[in-house]
Image (cartoon, rainbow, N blue to C red; front, side, top):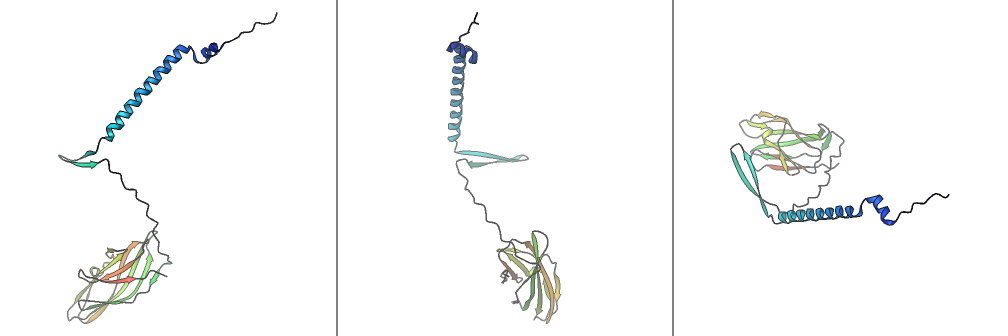
Length: 206
């Protein structure tokens, strides 16, 4: 006797894979209703935030507090990354071609030599040898206060702790040292005790 064959209809296959079609359809409608409800909530909150034009930032310190208005509609400007700075080519010590003299209040400063030396992996030192000739009859200061280094337009003070006296009608040599980053484009030595210092550009080309 041939074995009996079991024939399954389309709905039988649906029941085997998804269960009762009516129960599955009910779950699907519940899922659609939940998705529709969630979409309305998200849309409502987005519209609410769109209507906000200004906010208040409250800053407190101890018993004191203040509120700062903030414009939340302002779009921050996109800033492009700055190009990499040019590093001094070296090799070090790097001798600079500078031989100048500057007169300030009857004192003549002769720039005898200038060289850049490596301090560490990122910073360098500028060593400037200076001769101060005092044409006055009384002593004058020969110190760091007279010198500044303009690094890319920004004045820097020396670190050499030069603090000497030049007697009247005499001369004295000294060294002024500056420290700065090795990513520099322009250097200029500023000489003078008053606000109007004389500017001496330094040539960094090799």
